[in-house]
Image (cartoon, rainbow, N blue to C red; front, top):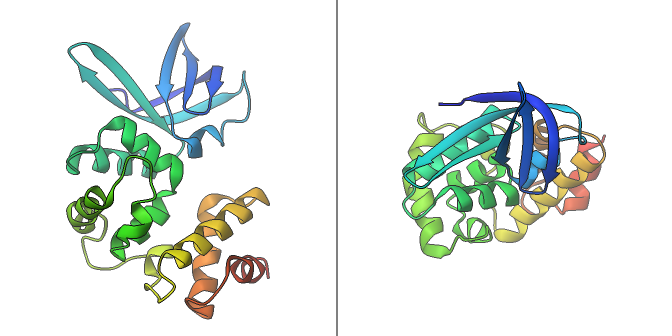
Length: 201
């Protein structure tokens, strides 16, 4: 099993990268959240990988963070109806922290926004992964945010605020931490603008 791959970027597209390692080019399927963190052709990159071996094909899936790779494995191994392609689509749409938060809060409506995920699949995702992501009944970061009356709009405000902070140069984990703190202070009525301003204070 190939767990980590480090090499030079030869080719790059939104959902795929070819990495040269010892004269061999490895084609790796990646989510948008990972491709956005690969600087340019010729740069060196390290990806945490998951290999899928079938009778008629072999595929390699890569992620910039170990946490993303591990969550991808949970999706494809534990949730019926979700294969590698849908798993990549889900992680292209939302960060792992946002996904964990939605699962912890039973936010089926938000999860249903992921490509390839209908309401029934979103419900299965919550049921089959809740114990895996919250084994002790606790949560951290954005997962600690309680669901408010704003429902899906609240989740959208959180995502928009995190995305804006990342655009301003913050790492995703730091942006999520700041937004989570401000959300807990302001409550469910907070807009994305309120969250961004508060996180930048």
